[in-house]
Length: 496
Image (cartoon, rainbow, N blue to C red):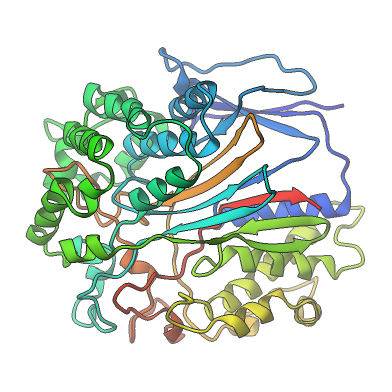
């Protein structure tokens, strides 16, 4: 039995892998594929396995120092587990599980916390995908709270200014995160709504220590921060951006969160918070209006379920491309009689990368199913005979130019996300991925509300604007109320 410890100086975490899983071919394939999915920007999974990986983060401690614990062969909890990208937020989520809350209660509190302490990747000015798996009936629901195109948006709106698609208030989609969290809480929550906001409000109002993760993002994007008044007020002092260890305050966001905690999401979608936000957006050149906020609707469906290699993958239907793309890659790899060789995993990694290239080309035929028919594209991606055909196109000693992978449309250049997983004491589980798209979204923060504006409109394809020689994907063209294609892939994976 082996123990492996890896330190991550960026997150100030120690990863401890407890025990050693038998290296069966299917487990290696699934694990390796998931890792590469994460590296390429698709985010998150929770899998019940015999092996346990635990993240110990100093963010949950007062002194912010690196922590270490001695672990046995297993870690068990009667109350549940929360794994977010900031230990403070994991602790906040866990605190509500200790109070008897459902995994969704903890998810609300965790999401709000992450939006405060890691605002470069998450926040109530953005959107999310959420999978809730219920132990009571073994069913999973998908909550699509992705941003939508404003009512005034149209296909050629960036024809005269391509930069406005990703930079500034015109790149903002209608935020959906709060609406989706509230809908999930109404269905599953056990605890009152208001207390779930208190920890995030306290962090925003009384200040929080800038962790290395946020500090690096602030440093990398300092020019973006110093250019915008709202961002500058929060993330800089005396003309210098904040550094790790500094204290950051966002008192306007604390006011917004407090108002929403007391009045519910109506304060955002049809009340004072929304009115202030819309006014700031208009002043910055955006087109999101109160009509857009009032008309936003969360989509709740049964989670998409796909069986591959002895596992059931529960995930988001389109416009997420990952729940279809991940099984496609697995089916390609599963068609090999031997994926790895005795000399190591290099060949398997090569095959995985080549399979991913084919999948990424195919996913550009997807889009928002309420606007375009994606049934045939999904069937092709999930087809095992099609996977076998693709496997025959993968050669073990070479790669090919992009056109070899049958790319019809220009590929989207996706940006970052934040992800967390939660399991409560009843084994209800949550997998949630949140985003504002680019780091610090469109580079605009609403001064009166403290809310960072997303730039999710950049995830749409638009005529005549592509980063390569391929044409844009028409299934992903802008229409009012449409959701853009996404690579976000929150999953719950169970053993069949």
